[in-house]
Length: 106
Length: 322
Image (cartoon, rainbow over all chains, first blue to last red; front, side, top):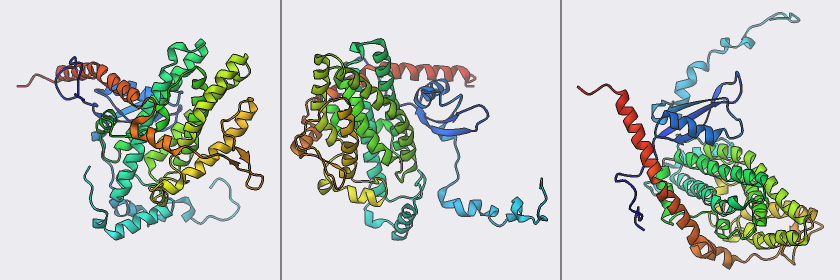
């Protein structure tokens, strides 16, 4: 089957467009959370596609789209060494401190 | 993608991976995974995405002929959901390092499989009801379990899909319940649709466990949580009382409740028919792929125009090159 039996399409490779990551806010005051991704030619198209794909039932009141290639992520193999500086700092938690029993508001 | 031989993989990494699975951890895109896990997921997820996309065609057939505005709006919304579900799953599949364009190409060239149920024709309006009730009902049984799959992006897409498909199933059942309580001709139409779709719906769960070579591995890696036969039984058990409630019969003389197990026992599935449809010889296989190709080709000018618009806008926003 030829790619374009109708002969009406332009030349040049067909494309699925660049990939964008979608972050959605579900309610006033809620954090933006990753929802998934969409393909789009530009930011405006990405926003519209994100709305149609990830918010057909009012799941979002706000959407961010970010080119996928602009995201820098920590690596799974670094998970231990990258995050372990926090492991020995129990004094960052309130439970570390001894307070006389029965006091309120502490 | 490049396939490496399984035995070149570091056994320690495989052991660590399987320990993570055993602990019930979620595997994320950048985590190390065996090649075989990756390829099995790409196969399963892309087949699932293709099924959502091809699944729009049998129902799209009735949009212009829906019997009321309410039914038409509902059907449009349902078909739009199926497009969305296809996109969620393609997006999840891409996290495994494969391009959507490659997957779409596999569908259009006939290399990829999709659920064989969509190779049956939709002959009457009652088929819209039965598809929602049986086909989406079976899909929910399947997907509720997949929502606990070990691969994070797949599981998350399934959770989203399951929420939406409850509407699909209920709208289908409402159509059938309405027809079943209507005129004798309407009830006969509903019964006819039930008769035609029942067995193909049972086949949606795939070959019986004895003939499902992938199942053991997929269960070991927690991609699947239940076998095909277990899920099929769950679907039969939930559907029989729903048919009884609207006074319709399921076309199986062997269907009976086992008093001990409390499961509905059912007759033999025609696996010859199943394999014939899977291999491309169902009633509508060629028609479905031809329709997808036509849609893809006819939409090309839109993709080209959007790309040209974006290129021009980008050029305008850049200062002239020195």
